[in-house]
Amino acid sequence: MWRFVFIFLVCVSASPFLPGLLESQVAATNNLISESRKNTDETEDRVHQISINRQGHFVADAYLNNFAVDMLVDTGATVTALPESVAEDIGIFLSPSDFKYGVRTANGTVYGARAVIDGLRIGEIRLINIEALVLEDESLGEPLLGMSVLNQLKRFDISDGTLLLVQ
Image 1 (spheres, helix red, strand yellow):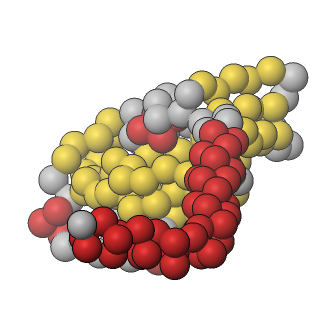
Image 2 (tube, rainbow, N blue to C red):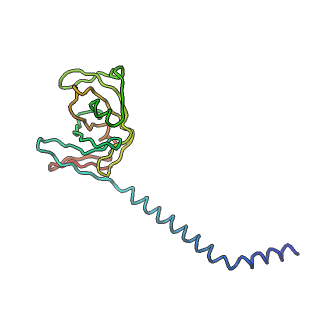
Image 3 (cartoon, rainbow, N blue to C red):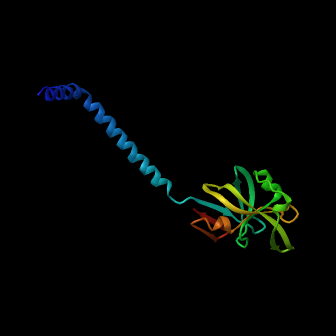
């Protein structure tokens, strides 16, 4: 019997605190709902447009490992390709023995080294772990944004002198 009286007294003494506890629980639930809505908004497509330049090329203002790099968009390149000096600028360091993969170019066969770019950003588009090929500076004049990047996008379209990238 004393047990029931004790439980009753605990419940009566806790009752003034109940509205505050309920308010905090409702506020926490509302925060979860608003966070969920934010996450839904973040899943909307990320879009970036690149206009054709005077030479008839699309050049992306990219950030590779947070380092600004202008990259020529090349849908004919299987992988993204970097000159060795650019690779070093973004933190990829290779030894001469790494250059063992033969690559056919317009100037003949050259040797490249496989690498991975940790992060790539073009406008709002963000990608990680990009497969790349590093070539000696004499073999590649400027960085190429190849299909190893474009294939990770939802789509890309070219029309009216504009390249549209959608993630």
